[in-house]
Length: 202
Ligand SMILES: [Fe+2]
Ligand SMILES: [Fe+2]
Image 1 (cartoon, rainbow, N blue to C red):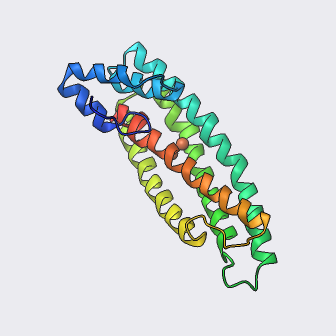
Image 2 (cartoon, helix red, strand yellow):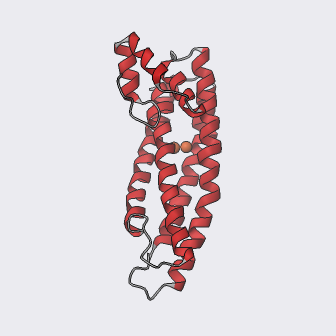
């Protein structure tokens, strides 16, 4: 059995299926798939423009909006509040994550602009089935994802790899945990867009 990198399917799997129709069989030995893994599989295997692809595109966009766009909008303000509290209360502590609240606020603002472009322009165009006009907006969104990866690297540095110091107060621990979750969610959000949804239209 050929192991598939997890989570989900990706470009590698798509290429594999293209080269070998029998490779479809490996998708049947994965055990129960989650709803999003099924959407990934359906979109990876569907031909562009067919009904199955349209269904999978719609399902994946809905998932991205609910699970990621709305979650980020809820969770960034909480993380920023936690960071402001920790920076204020522990200002004299050498381990204090100075600048973290401002960094999170910049990330949140940039992300809001990015998500609005996806919600108002890119996703509706995808749902309308207009493939030809998508190359430029997709490459722009992917370039903005590159900026997010750089912001995540800075987040990792500021939070000392999302690890609070020994004996940290509850707020500091909650802050590290919130930042770790933002990092994990953003990476999975961008993977789904870059490697699955956007790839389908390129
Ligand atoms: Fe997005
Ligand atoms: Fe995006």
